[in-house]
Image (cartoon, rainbow, N blue to C red; front, side, top):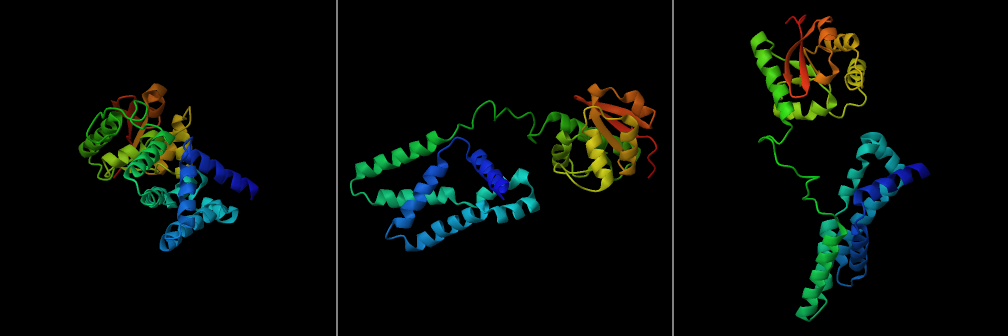
Length: 259
């Protein structure tokens, strides 16, 4: 259980990074808890948040939750904490305790400065870039989806199904839900064929013969791979012919497809 607690604590520190929000949050809880006029708020804010913290950090409940949702997304448990509401309410109580307007204004300014300075500016070139299209997804994904749709219409493929690298999964799904995918963006454990197909296409050196066999077994009519792999000839020998290129991706069609 110690390892579980350590894992949860790592999620906690990663979630809040280098900010002082946890400190401000606990100070706000203390203020509300000991404020004589905050009886209802003490139960609503302190009680609920302390309960959530107990559930989040308790090794037993943490172990069960991790088993259900996975360790990678356990940090979302911290969404249960009503941090913004608690901070805002505590600040209102603090400010209302001062009679002089100048002191109230100074308190608000200092509190706002503490909140602002404790985090990091999100609006930077590292986190925000100019959109390439109205869909706000990589243009290559749009080209891939449109190439598949156009070819499927020409060939009479009513329900095109594609196997694509994991980097394209969510974007293809967003742009054209009519293109079925062999697996979703969070596929970790699934049906045996799906799992093998996922592992093969996302490997550093996919094997054309095995990839074609698994794609066909999963009833995928289209196969998308990085063009840099140069698997045109090998895939053609396994009946997957190249029909187009979309940016850095090559699109292959199963010539043995039979509706």
